[in-house]
Image (cartoon, rainbow, N blue to C red; front, side, top):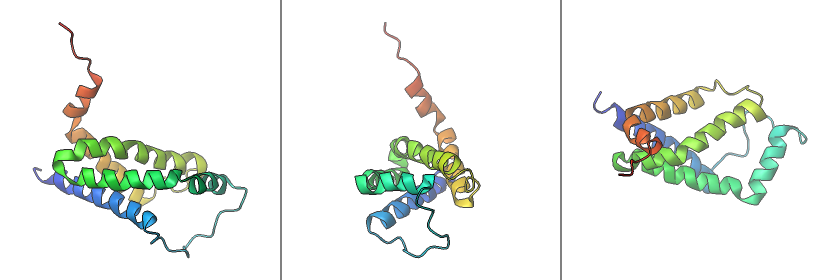
Length: 136
């Protein structure tokens, strides 16, 4: 149990680091197993707004940074603060824009469980963010 947070943080960090870097270095294969979405679909419209504006590049830079921070035990909490909203938005994208089809993707479930586990392990540190300091 002592090394489980280190393993979980390393796996979560490596995953986000690798996926972010693959996008930034343009290593994403052009041919995929799934056909491109129709032009007027919500997915195509959403990606049509994210790609040309540079917003997705910004998110991917944060994924690389958050992945590095989560992989290191000393900076794990800061990495979770960066990756948490990104993971929530990935889940929201799959729920609302894709239509819930890929919410049960095994990779998404594993990444979510790793993040929730690390949040649970560090719950005291995150609880301190919610508590107001007493002014005496």
